[in-house]
Image 1 (cartoon, rainbow, N blue to C red):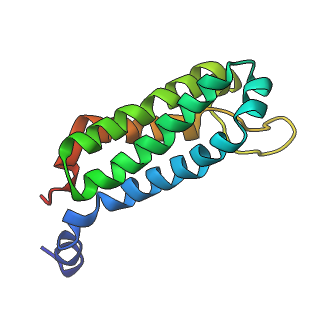
Image 2: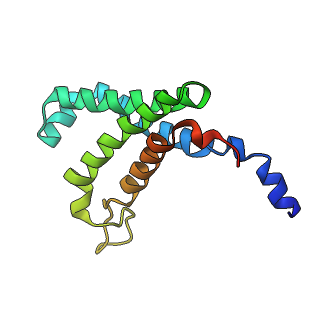
Amino acid sequence: MNVITKTLDGFSGLGHWLPRVSLAATFLFHGFPKFMMAQGMADMMGMPVMAVYMLALMEVGGALLILWGGFGPDCATRAGGLLMAGPMVGAIALVHGANGWNSVNMGPDMPGNGMEFQVLILAISLFFAIKGNGANEAN
C-alpha cells in the first residue's frame, strides 16, 4: 500500500461528512427562504401556499436530520435522506426534467435549467436513505 493510500484510508471514516454537509447546506440555503416567501412562491408556481410551507419543512427538516444522523441515530440519516428525496423528485418531474440534462448556462442555445444538479442531489439523498450511517464506516 502506498503512502497516499494509507494516509487517505486514515480519513475514510470521516468521508461521509463531505456529501452530508454539502447536501444539508444546499437544502438549508434553499429551504429557509421558502418560509419567508411562501406566498410569492406559491403564486409563481401555481400551488397552494401550504404546499410551499410543507416543501420548506421537508427541506430544512431533512437537512437537520442528515446532520444529526452524522453524530446520532441511523434513523435520522435515513429519514433525512427520504425527506430530501421527495422535493427532488418533484423538482425533476415538475420543472427541470422538461429542460433536459444541462443545468449550466452555456450560451443562448443552452440556457441551463436542466436536471443534472437535481439528479445528483436526489442520488446523494437516496444514498443516505439506503446506506444510513453505514456511510460513516471506514473500510
